[in-house]
Length: 550
Image (tube, rainbow, N blue to C red):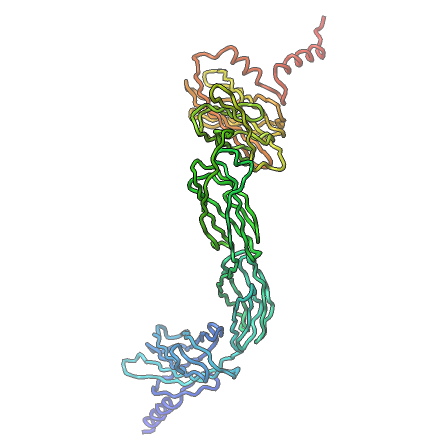
C-alpha cells in the first residue's frame, strides 16, 4: 500500500513540475514527459526601412521523443507580421532526440518607443509515444531594439541629397555612380548630406552602401534622369564662296542657337550629297560651315542635335545647288588626312583619264569615279591633270584635316631577290626603304610559308633613317618545289605599331645556283662581321703569331 502511494505522488509531481532552463520563463505542461529546452531570440536581419527578421533558436536536451513542434509568438506593440497581425505561428518537424531548431520570420516595425521588445512564446511539443500527448511551454523573451535607420534620397537641381528619416543613425555610407564617389562617416537622425551631380550622363544608377547600428551593411540602388532644357534652334543657308566656282560644290552655314551651356553633338547626313564635316561638337550659340559636293540640282541634308546621349533637335534642309559656269572644273576632288595616309576621292562629269599627283609624283591614273590613298608627306594639296578637246588642264585641291605636327616614318618593300642556296634552303633578300621624314624603330622582318613548319624572323638591330634603304636576308626552309611566301615588316611609328605585307611565289630549281651558294656564304657573320672579312684576317693573324721554322 505504501509503495502504491509513492508511485502516485511521483506521477502527480511530474505533471505539475517540469524543469525548463530559461530564466524568467513560465511553463505549463499537458504531458507527464518533461522536455529540457532553452529558447533564444535575436535579429536575423536587423531593422532597416521598417522591416526586419527575427531568429528564434530552441536548444533541447537529449532523449526528447517528439516528432513535431509548433511555436506561437505574440509580438509586442508596434511590431506586426507580414499581414499586419500581432502574432507569428511556425511548425517544424523534430528529427533528432537532441540538438537545436532554428526558425526565422519577418516583422514590420511601426511606432515603437521602447528599446526592449518583449515577445511571448508558446511551444507545443507533439510527443512520439503512440498517444496524443502534447507538452506545452510558455516563454518570455526580450530583444534589444536600437531603432530603424530609414534613408531617403532626392535629386533636384543637379544635387543628390541623402537624408535619414528613421529612428537610428547610419554609419560609413558610400555613394558610387558614373563620375560620383562620396564617403559619409556618420549621418544622424534627421540630418542630410548633399552631393553635386555632373551633367556628363543622361541617366544615373547610384549605388548606396550603409552600416546600421546592428553592425550590418545594407546596400541599395537609386536611379534618376538629368532633365534637359536646351531650347535648340537651327537654320541652314548656302553662301557664295570659292567653292561656288566648282560644279556641285556649295558652302552652307548652319547657325545653332541655345540658351544652355551643355556640350552638344551636331550630326549631319545627306542621301544625295557628300557632306563634310559629318559631325561637330559645339556649346551654346555656334556657326558651323559645311561643304557639300552633289551632282543634282537640289540638295537635302538631315541635321540632328544630341546632348547627354539624347536627341534634342532634328530637321531637314533643302536648297538649289549652284550651277556650273564655263570656268568650272569638271571634276570634284576631296582629300582628307587620316593618320599618316591621304584618302582621296575623285568624281567627274564626263569620262576621261585623270592623273592624280601628289608632291610632284603620279600616285594614281584612271577614269573617275575612283578612290585612292597614299602616304602623307607634308604637302597640303593634290593636283589633277586631264585633257579636254586636246588641251591639258591642271587644278590643285586642298587637303582637309592636316595634322599640326608632321613626323612620320614610312617603310615600303622596294625589292625581293630570291636565291636558292640548297634543295631545302632559300634566301630572300628583302630591300626596305624609308621614304618618311623620321626614323623607324623596332623593325622586324618575318617570312612565312605554308610549305615550312614555322616562320623565319629577322630583327633589324638599328633604326632605319629617312631616305635609307636596308637589305635584310630572310631564310625559307623546306623541300617543296614551289613556295607561297608572305613577307611582313613590323615597325613602330609615333608609338603605334605598323605592318607591311607582300606576297611572293618562289620556284625551286633542281640544283642550287652558284650565286646562291655565294649569297649563303656572304650572309654568314660572326658578331655582326661578315665571315668573308673574318677568315682572311684570321689567316693573316696566324702567320704573324706563328711563323714557320727554317
